[in-house]
Image 1 (cartoon, rainbow, N blue to C red):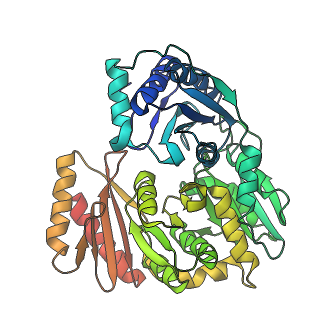
Image 2: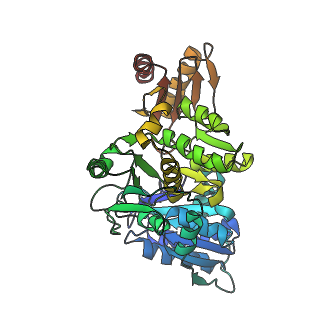
Image 3: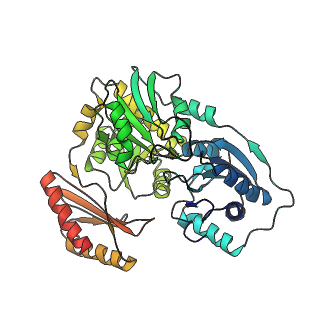
Length: 445
């Protein structure tokens, strides 16, 4: 059990770290912790997701709560089901982009409010470890099936405003993006499907668009010509990566800026969040589009909380998560695709020419360094604060960030791995390279 209760979800190797017995205990602990009465549960297409569902549902119903079985669905669909069906909790059975042997649970309260390590996962772990469940209910809860796919697809299609037919290539990685794509049916989109047969073993490549090598097949398809853009979904389809018509990768923070332009046309003056690793250009584009740019710390639980606090309509994260107020302030990769389709179809310019003026600065990308201990990480962050804090504008929203007139950096510890992460941007490529090397020398000693 040790190690599977993480900062944002519960995740481990099926049959070794995560078993049916443990899933049953997690179901009991969730119902004990929340006192919930109606739980929406969806699952991905990994072969072991079905037996984990049966065990989890057994634990939940033992405590007297009812389970709404959403069946096989994407994570955005599970959030939608949680909210629209009036459930007071939700679980998505998935290990996201992890390889096939892994599985896990993403947990939420009513209205798809996420449960993180700090807001419940640690409590659930303690209940499981101690066996401190509430007594079984006198009347066991029920399990009822509700296929949410058609309702979700109809909901997503409402955001489409596609002014001319587009041709798109989509890499589904044999995973849950196949379900998301049902929302595109009936729209003026011609879609070439790559790896569009469901297979929870992910036989063709890892379902993770952050690993750029997984985009090779999509880029090759786009390179044949005639496409407006390409999209690659991750394993549970709560993230998406995009390719322009030339086969070039569009950075995910630049995608935040583009999608924000579409959202703000319908919601002028609204707040839009971007994570603190994003280019300066994202803030500038949001302002140019008439929105109120707001910076968030990294992590979906933090971003969703800040969105709710400030009534934001949209947020984007450098990892390819795109959050929509309309979907209960949760991700929807299908809505991200349609937002881009709206923008591209409304312009005479190809996507690459739309991206070019937004790429105003030069970024290092995220550079990871493995450190020996938390004390070592604290030492590095303290060193950077003392070295740069007085000369620039320092803030500590997540790790340490310092902004200067011509460059900025953020250094933060990973929430999931023993790593410290550097992101840096400058106004010239030469300044970026020099500052990057300067900081890496300090970080790596």
